Image (tube, rainbow, N blue to C red; front, side, top):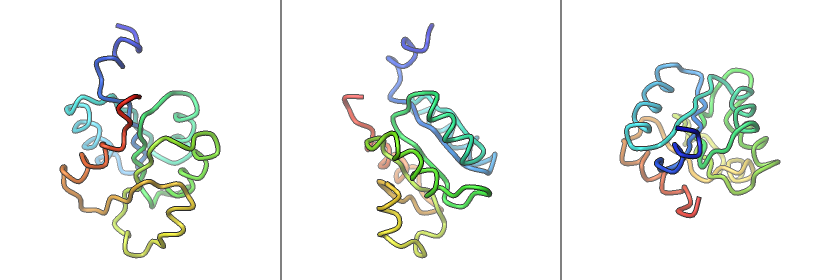
Length: 130
């Protein structure tokens, strides 16, 4: 089966960018179990490179990562794609300024710890016409 065939049976393609291997593993397993295709990146630069080389329907990105924050990832993505939904995952939502988040192009902030229902709600940002 080629990638186009796999994409047709998928609910969408999601890029998960997080520096914690266990978080990437758990999110990847859950999302794949829910019918999504998932690629993961261990840091911001790798995430931006994967995004540039492939097509995704949504990005889940951790806020605090060494080298490049989730806001910086979003800012770089927005230079070439203004429509892809970007969800920022953080335990520091209370400390983030709404204007800074909006200026980076973040569509939604998902506060840690989050429930699977809250995560699934973010996935509704994927356009039905993808």
